Image (cartoon, rainbow, N blue to C red; front, side, top):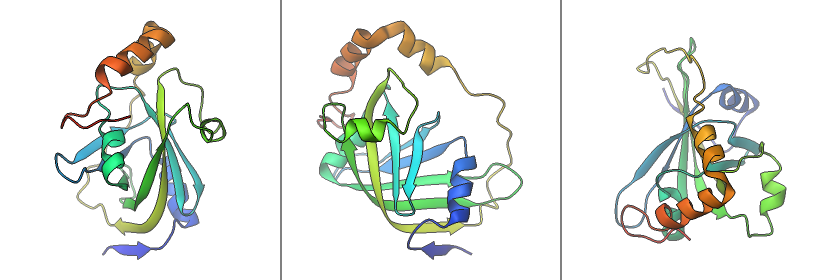
Length: 177
């Protein structure tokens, strides 16, 4: 049976820190809902009501576009191990960019990454847990190195050019900043 919480408990935080993967969901006022898997060392819990995550350059930039219209964001974490659990954080988020004053202080929470594009700052208003009995057990074999190699090969100017060419407009034709 699902349970609701106003903020993350110490056991929630421990659970989140153990997960190698999380999912982010956002939606514009009109258009397609986006649900993306995220990995790497890209998530930090700053308090029981605040999570930040570093968004790396990728093929799309839907989350940034959506937040310009609707600040709602859901993060989902689920166990693929022995103890089943699904945990969702609901709240509102803002995007922080490298040219903004808050960037340096927030970026200091993450390992250096040449593909960094935004930091999303989630203010939590609800936590919901559910059993996760229907989620299969799976083992993580290894982390993928593809993105790191791609970022390294492109270099700083190549990443900037890619962002200009591929990350300025969402799939629904919305600006991403």
